[in-house]
Length: 139
Image (cartoon, rainbow, N blue to C red; front, side, top):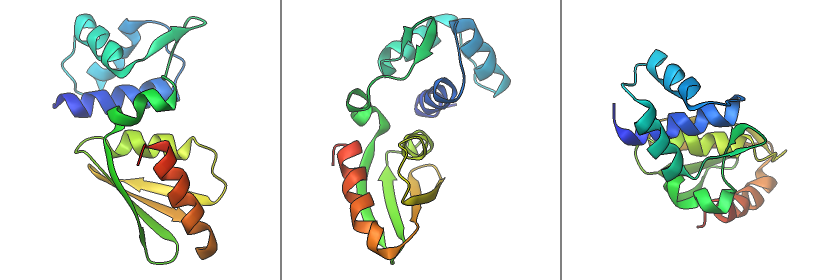
């Protein structure tokens, strides 16, 4: 599988689980069909800026990840939908960040390979959410 897909899967795993050892990541990725070694996972963690904090692997601060998530554009689509375009393979990781950002105006996200649909509760909240997404992803 492509490296970009593996990287976004690592972001998802570290964001969703308490992982203390690299071999746990290797096992999880292997179960998902990725052919990885401890050395390749170590390089991936370094590239993504993932570090151990209090014994657990932790996602880096958002501003360090902006470029890694590959978001290219954020635009309105209708009254309550926002379309976020990313580099291929990174939409799921970016959607995970949107979901964990605690935006009460967001009902949910749906991610494909390079596109995310973000649904907001009310039409008058769309502009504020677009602004926040642009701030999150450096747009």
